Image 1: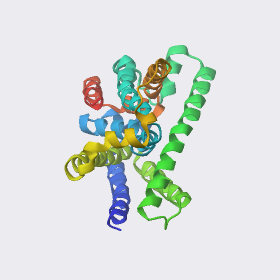
Image 2 (image 1 turned 30 degrees about the vertical axis):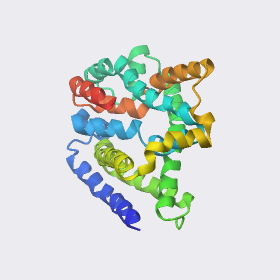
Image 3 (image 1 turned 180 degrees about the horizontal axis):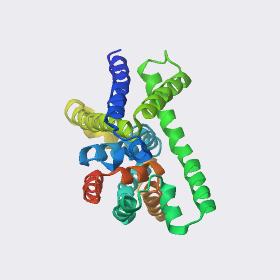
Image 4 (image 1 turned 120 degrees about the vertical axis):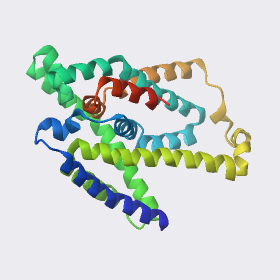
Length: 273
């Protein structure tokens, strides 16, 4: 019950944050609404990128995959770090161009580079289509979290619809600034949760030290050293996710929204950890 009350309090806190974001939007322009005027500082940019890249999949999908598959899931740690390397290949230069040519959407760079409206529309459609997978993963994570916190009283489907409604409300009210500020709250909560969970695991649970031996006894296949084919799969996964994850449209928007190229580089340097 305490967990549910904290979760509900968190949800109700999002709306005032969105309203403050709206009050801070001084000029009614697309850049102000979609990019927060390109004024996101280091802390806010770090938290919003952190919450965007390492969100429901990190807290629910990958731990479940590690439980089911064992050592294979180690690659998820590496390819999440590789995404930051993917950003470093193009993000600083893209930020400079975005500031110079006033880009707002990922398609703006394509239109600037190739001067082809059909190409821009096709690319925008493909990016939107690719986002459906990411969007679906977040909705599933939210639904399972809400249903779990209520002990199954609130059905999974109802949790998805309710939380999706909350997201639509605060994003519509405050635009990117509201999203970044709520992401900051979420990012701080995620980091705090990881630290506290790690502390509890290694100080209050005695059997954690014998966990490797237990896995060997119960499911030895999960700790078997990978063969060459598996290693090749890991390498290709790191490459694909490292480049592809850095191309997420919502990530590109945050590159545009950074206060400066220096702020962006500092953020990515810290984010890899």
